[in-house]
Image (cartoon, rainbow, N blue to C red):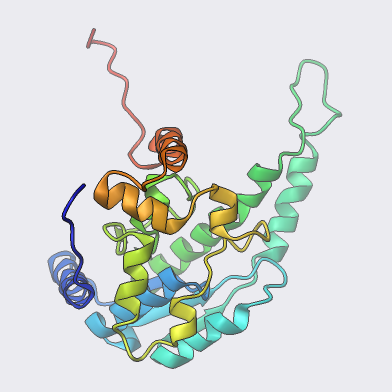
Length: 258
């Protein structure tokens, strides 16, 4: 077993320094990110506010129709004093359903059909949110902050061309467990939001229910080589292999390399 140890305060300060370094190197002062009310975007927003000043952080709430816990998102923005805006993507999602309905059972001769696919539909939301954030980022001359953590990335619990798209990944080196630990060192954050049960906001289930393993097991698998449960390790390994395509740029196929 690994002897890995984690210092939350040092990680917090290191990330704040890293934000300032990339801002200096790339020449930007503003950042924008989606605020879901969950721990990742909450902690990411707080780190950016400390690094760049709250006036330079733009938090965007993007419910898909009705979002029951949107008050949590507002609490984050208000607690940090960052710029905030709400953009409801529900109408965009419904408009896209009109298009996908055309892919169904009726098609012209020679055309293929595509039946309704629930997982595909669930992933529309994150992709619409990223399109919205990209538009706003360019208009505001701001960089888009990625808020996915290492646990999610490892098991592929993210949407390709959705929340995997960013200008820099702020929490990608920290597991879900470590993000919570960092958040608990930041007194400006509501504690209940830092320890809030993670959910995708799409399916009505918690992350752990959908994954079939706990974030603590994923943390132990990443940091110590095993969760201590062979069945959990095997499932995490399968998820990791299946989600590998989400973790890197598309491979370029070389016709001259044999």
